[in-house]
Image 1 (tube, rainbow, N blue to C red):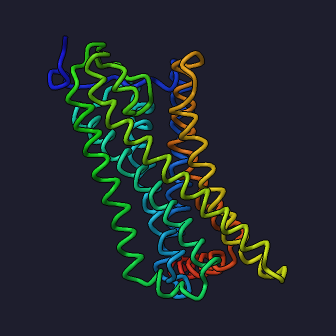
Image 2 (cartoon, rainbow, N blue to C red):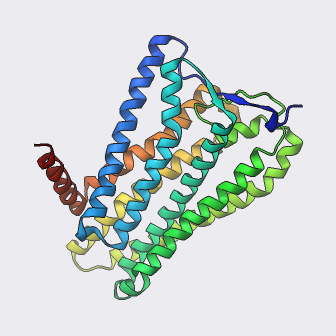
Image 3 (cartoon, helix red, strand yellow):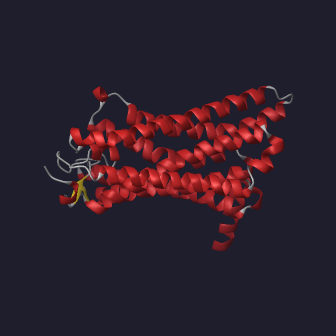
Length: 311
């Protein structure tokens, strides 16, 4: 029975069998990666440089963009390199780093999305107390708590996962080192050691989900009591992008980890992995900038400044 420490490398799932399809996948992934870098980079630059966006809502949006940048940079570069050089290998240390960083960034992003729902709740339901409840110190503390929670959660999961004996070889049925696929390589009796952490994870995830739902129930109740359509429009314009991002994040993640085992297959797992690890970081900047006039104005200023520097 090989221990994880005796394995020097893992074999990732190949994106394609033929050389032509591998190169096609490389260019597609490169386009997606550059689009995600551009979108999240522009959002981060606009929020950091535009003084009108130095508010709690955009501060948390900046954190979300940075987490999305880190998340997609953890998985896609190695997948692109493997497709380009026709290889499946990833070192043991590289696999551990991928699992740690991906779990860390995904967990912190879920916490940030939960905090953003609280921010919208306070802004709409308790506007007179918004300046007190969401001052700069409170925002920094909540953001630090989100990043710290993700870090602690990832440390526990990564240490627990890679301490298990790997009885079923080193072939990972995913295009990156996904924790669920690493756990499939371990012995069933040792997997019970991970069950406690997984149970706590499910409880925490359900708690955050419940908090988001209750926050928006209160938000919609307050919005429906507003007398003017202008108030409705302003409230929905700030809440709808966040709701869309939360739905995209949760629907892809829940389908990846809660789909029935009867429909599981390497090709479906690959598609689902791409869906929840690549699509949200790429689409989040688009969702937040589509109906937000302040973001559009700040982005236009950033682009004008960049063009003036190039001329």
